[in-house]
Length: 175
Image 1 (tube, one colour):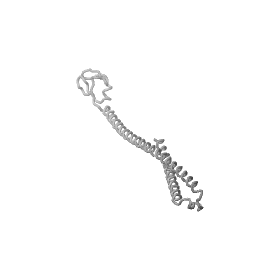
Image 2 (cartoon, one colour; image 1 turned 180 degrees about the vertical axis):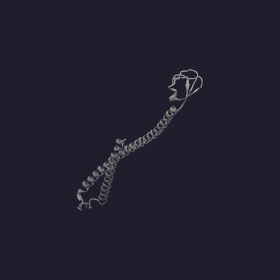
Image 3 (cartoon, one colour; image 1 turned 90 degrees about the vertical axis):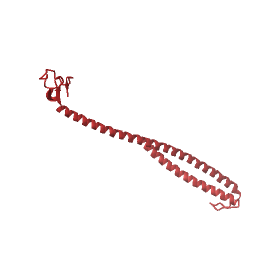
Image 4 (cartoon, one colour; image 1 turned 30 degrees about the horizontal axis):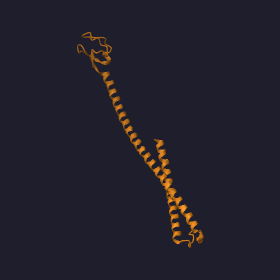
């Protein structure tokens, strides 16, 4: 369970990092796209919006360079989206496992509490039974003569009335 929580924590941090990188890459992509659109709109007679020099003969080269950067930026955005989505799917799976394990743990804890309660009840019954045995009245099975408590009757070898043997545990005696 602890390992699962560590995996979840690690994946949350990874997701946050990838999401931040994705947001940054999207901003960079939009910036490059806007720059390329402005250059295309103004044509070769325009000036560079960064260095303010006329584009002139370098227009095609600059346009090609910006298009290449835009493509690379687009691939970076897609790659980061893919990685982020994979981490999100894995995180949801781990979260599901964590929920299942928590439910199982809670069920087992409830069952343990129930069993401990039943154990205590059985111990109480056993204790009361032992107390009853100490004070239980024993009768001779043959003649139904009361012989007193179990502790006393165990010391008498035979029934004083009919002569039956009085061995405690013998089927001839009932409690």
